[in-house]
Image 1 (cartoon, rainbow, N blue to C red):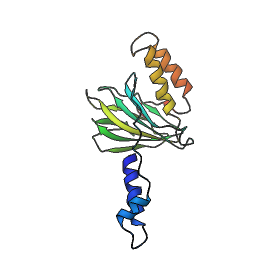
Image 2 (image 1 turned 90 degrees about the horizontal axis):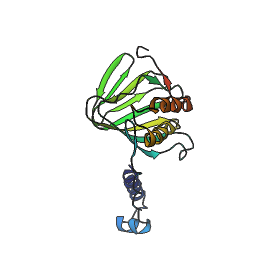
Image 3 (image 1 turned 180 degrees about the horizontal axis):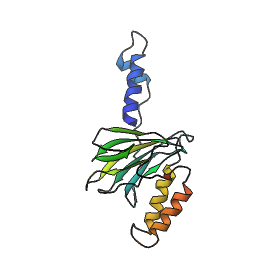
Length: 184
């Protein structure tokens, strides 16, 4: 994404060159583009891995972007976000989303928007992993995933203490995530 933006900016700089200047002159006048920094390493949590691409801290709370790779067969329980809109761009696998009484499977390239307040569930549609880029507006909910990473360092799903740890994490993030009945 960053390389795409650099390319677009470079193209714009060329387009805006004064008449009579050449691409060679324009390229010499512009500083060389710096290579994009390496993306952060994925961190494991109970349902897969998460990479924090842009945090709410970096955007003044306006939004956050994470890459999730969720295990095959994992579906989040029905829930809602009263104070946040979220979207998923499917990179690999098939994302199953249930909302408004309908279940739809979304393959690579699909873009799914879940407005705030809508009860939904999402995850892998089959036994294969699904990888998505998730955007949260406003940001803040990424703290929930950071908490899941921390919980996974000590306790695995199904082990004693995991369920208590998840309930604690849900209470700490109740501004961002609330349970929802499947039929809502």
